[in-house]
Image 1: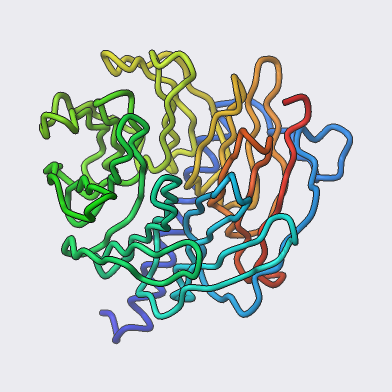
Image 2: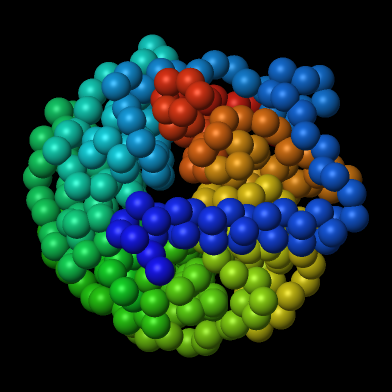
Length: 339
């Protein structure tokens, strides 16, 4: 029998390790050969490490990032630290900090309002003036406010939260416009017009919803593929890309029907997925970025636990957040060769 929390923790850890081992076996067998892994400085690497930017006094897991392109300021949600750091990319250093947060997870930037949006594990969504990081508004969604997306059509702020919901917020008034009810907690989600494609790993599904009509349109089962966290929309808008953690797999699906188009093994513990033209970038906590393009499938070594990042096409740059483990916490700034 179990004897208290320590033994229970060991049981959970052993189970997790077994699942990760299974994922590694399935991933290797799926591709038929060991993947090509290169260091960032290797000539064969499709990513070139330009610099690292220190995150002083940051401990614990780091979550999502956002960018103010005009002023070249990067915002980093530091989940375990309870902070959001502002990085001056021109100076290459942290220039300010929002502190006192409870598990900040999602972050976004509103160019028109010049405001930062932060969604946190306590269910709060807070808005800050970018000029001085002063809080200007706050909403409470319930619990576990997570990913933040900005609707390109109208500037609305969409936030995944709780046991199953996406809230739509008017950034001008900071008022809640609607709540879309989902069957489980939403992880990665993206928009094509009013259609939202949402990963719901708790239910082993991808949900398609209309955010204007505030209703679910379809539910696609992920079958034996589990833990679908990051999701992206392909440039054509006709397909979506989904990454699973068990097994570690990248899949392409038709956006209209959910039909599987292709799949391949990828790096483990993925939490972010970006498109650079026709190149797919999978950011993984296993300490790799998988770069997939026509005739190219390379994994670039990063740092243990570095599973979140942000690709900024205007800067031709991929930022990867490396937590404090082997080395102090930092943002790794990569250029994508040939982009």
